[in-house]
Image 1 (spheres, one colour):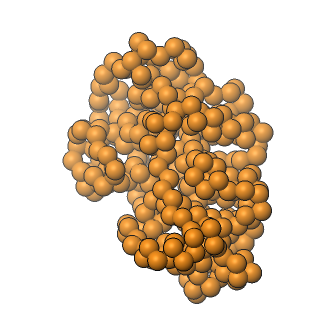
Image 2: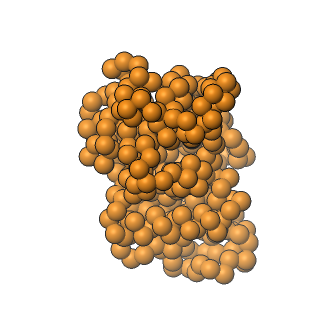
Image 3: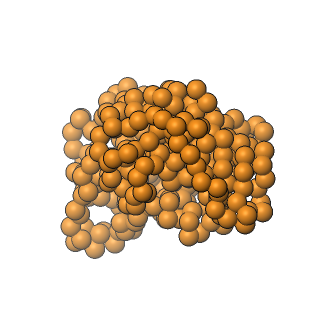
Length: 326
């Protein structure tokens, strides 16, 4: 089979497309003929050797796929060959075939296409876990979404509205903010327009924001935390700008606020039943049209480096997909 491979850590430009073989699925795995793979920020990190864990070289990036099961491991009894599925793989998804974890491989209702599924699992799975399980957001609370036009950001807007939050989208251009408002954001803040802290407090009548969804990191993390309400929750999702922030611990003390980590990969491995409940909720929302995947572009598998470069340059609104059958 053809696969996009990392043979040495570093630049995206070092990715190669060549023939690659997969081992027989382990007892907790399934082998999937991939139709579409989602491209996400962790794929950039894992390619550069900067992610929380690293597979052995060579490997293929790609943490989420949608396709059809062609082989199952000996211990898998809830899935069968021929099932249409969406699967969390952690890596290996940028290929014609991939191994998925059985605990995070989910049957697709006929109403949901492979394209829709591949555009939602990792981003919406992260967001639902973050807002529902970690922040425990409740109807009527305010939610500030940093990096709101990206993959997890655009998902956070939609999930936030489903859970009854008042959503403030934060992005770097007016065009991106228009995109966020089309997704349902109640208000928008352009980072370049001035002090983010002041704007967030103004939009909440001086009270502060109840929940901050932060996949960005860097200076915006502390700035937004300084605008958090008493008892607020700041969700640490990632560091898209490349800088891990250092927030002074007197700030959460003075505000009785929480800094809360959101690591979906750890969640689905350690709490598969709760993760499955979240995914079933997501699939139900997709069937009803309550949330809609925002697909910026679909590129052929051979253009994986181009897709990742667009993601790195923040040129993607929503999600970018690879068609692994072309």
